[in-house]
Each structure stands twice: as C-alpha cells, then as structure tokens.
Image 1 (spheres, rainbow, N blue to C red):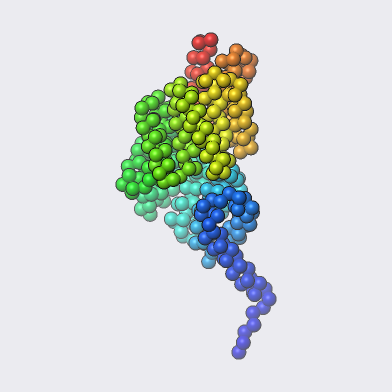
Image 2: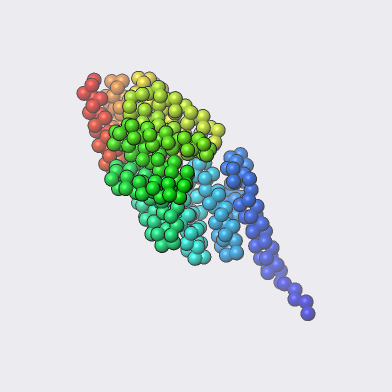
Length: 358
C-alpha cells in the first residue's frame, strides 16, 4: 500500500532539507573560513536567518554550532555586536538543551569576548567563571586556559592587577604545555599590557614583541593589529612618540586590509595620544574626535572615557583650561560609572602632573 504524505508534511520535510543544505553550504564556504568581507557583507542577513532558524532544528545542531563559531570573527570585526549577542545567547541555550557541554563552553567564550567589546563587565565575568567551571568539569584545558587568559586581561584592564597576573600566568603555562601558539601570543599580549600598567617597560616590550612575532609568523594579522596598538601604547608611555606612531600607522594599514572596522577607533584613539605627546595638538584633537564618533556608534562608553582623558590633557597642554576641565570631569564621571578606579586615579595623576609643569 502506498502512503501519500499530506501537503503540510511535505512542506515541512522540504523546509528541513533546504535549511540543512543552506547551513552546510555556509559552514563549508570559503568566504566564511577566510572571512571574505565583501561576500559576507552581501550575505550576512541570509546567513543570520539560516542560523536563527537552524537553532530550532535538532538535527541541524552540529552544523549550526560550527557555522556560528566560524562566523563569529566576521560579526565581531564588522561591529554587528547587538545582533550577534542575541544569536549567541540562543545558541548557548540550544547547546544546553542538546547536552553539548563542549559546544556550550566554546559559545560562552565567544559571548564573553563580545561582552568585553560591549563594555558589559558583569556579564563578562559571569560567563568566564561559568566557562572555567565547565572546562574543569569536562577536562577541556584549552578553553580553561583561554578563559583564564581573557578574564585575566579584563582584570588587568580594570586595575585588579594581582588577580589578572595570576590568571594570565596560569594560562600561559597551560598554553605552553599544549604548544598553542594562538594562546601563547594572546597571553603574552595580556601580560605586556599588565607590565605597561606597572611601568615595567622591559617586561612589557619582551611580552609584546613575543606576541607580535608569533602573530606575524602564523600569520594572524587581525591579532597583530592589537599587538601593534599595545606596542604603540608602551612607546607612548616611554615618551617615544615617533616609534609609537610608526606602529600605529602599521596598525591602521592592517585595519584597512583586513576589514577590522571595529578596531579602527582604538588605533585613532592611540594616535591622538601619540600626537599629543609629539606636541601636534591639532592632529591629536582630530583623531580623538574620529575615535569618539566611532565609539559612540558602538556605544562603547568606557573607551570614550579614555578619549576624553586624553582630550583633557591635550587642551590643558594648549592652555585651554575650560575645555580641559570639562573633559576631565566628563572622563572621571565615566570612570566612576564603570568602577574603573585605576583609570580615575591615572587621570588625576596625569592632570596634576601636567598642570604643575605648566
């Protein structure tokens, strides 16, 4: 006897088959693997729709998970943070429903990294702590080390240096044992930033050059942008403005070549810092303005606090005390909102030191 499927069932089967085919197509597509900006810009909405629909299809889970992981760098670098945040939250719920602990760990690391870009500090800490617990439970040493390294960087950035150093050093030793160049480079970079904060210039240069060397050889030009930014910051702190501007120029070129639009504001912010140190105040103000505009588009107010910090010092150096005082107060207010005690303390010290020199 022949069984004829009714029309609704046929439509449902056709839809599942079509969706699985599209998900597999994009998961294996060269544009996703190589992060080909032009292609992904044109197809972004279609890929996101396929992912969203696929999260409700149990048989598609493995394909959807792998596509999300592969597509994450594009969404982060192009600044599509809010939309991607929603997708990752849905994916984590799906991983929990499927009992996929390793998938949940990897997706939660991606969400925590995204929260760092979005200045969602409390969420970041919560997600990384859960990753650490899950990774310990499953024995996933790589993701454990990655979570320790990234959480350590967050603590370093927030002025909790001892906690950040402990986590970063643990991560580095684990990455060394795993022979993970990716992990080693990022953790060297984090420890380099810590050394800058502690004014240990020699250690900072050693860590940052090690990171940049690994990224150059890999090659990983997206990460190399961050390395150049931090080397520039180090040389600014050492009052070597010309050397800092050299690395920032290299970073700016790489942002254009790689389509790393989300990172360009940081390059411009650091250029404003370097030009201020070089005494080129007009250029400093121009680049600070460009950075602020870009950060506003991403609602990255913590980064704007640093821009205003630099503008306060720039206007103070030019003798414009009204503007200097205004930007100082605005930066202090934002530092307080983000509980960035280190940033607030540094601004007070920088402002007082420059005022006394005048």
